[in-house]
Image 1: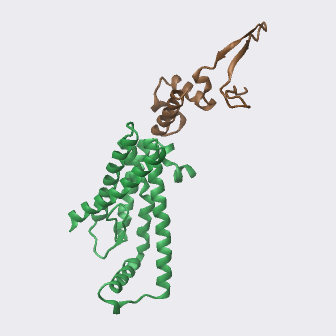
Image 2: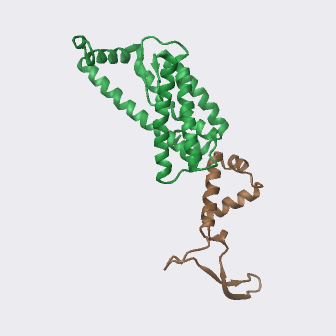
Image 3: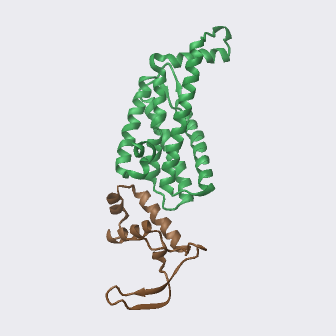
Length: 87
Length: 195
């Protein structure tokens, strides 16, 4: 599946959603919707958050599953929190 | 292999690192005893003539504890989430390359060479008996020791970086200060115990 673009290729501004469509009946909705903060993160970080939620918020479990050390996983989460706070 | 040599702190659990760290330190101390090496300071290695079996173990314990405490204090300043176990593991494992320097004293060669140099530099210049091959050996030893020292500090910084999520100049400055203070403190404690 193609990665959702979040930055404008011309001016690097954050993109907004201007059209949504139904894959079943092809109904289209036009408007101006801001991308949620989580959607503005790189795909890798979004997957990390998904994994974090699925493990019940246990960094220890995540570290074991990913084959990484505990501080490495904790640092990754701290970096994502920092990115979200800066949005 | 790259993970083991250059990124051990990113990829292994604290329990594995602690076990390997303790075993490696015991082995390093044993090698130091066999080859008459003293690690009398976190950045020091000296070859001596008489060595009790427990000296290298005590030296290395003091070095690891001094290094851990100083780095932990700096780590807490950089990031409040820093854990002592991660810093302790970094201090244990980063020293492994340094323990290899003990092998330079096979048959007491390096010890006797440094003693001859000391005699020349101090009160007995007439005793200088350094040949061309000795000078080459000294140069090779100095070069290898420097590489091992750089590798030791590299591993230590990587461990500190992972433990503290260190970024920016402040974290680097605190790391350098911690290493320097740990050197002074470890040296002082070892001096107090033995002299």
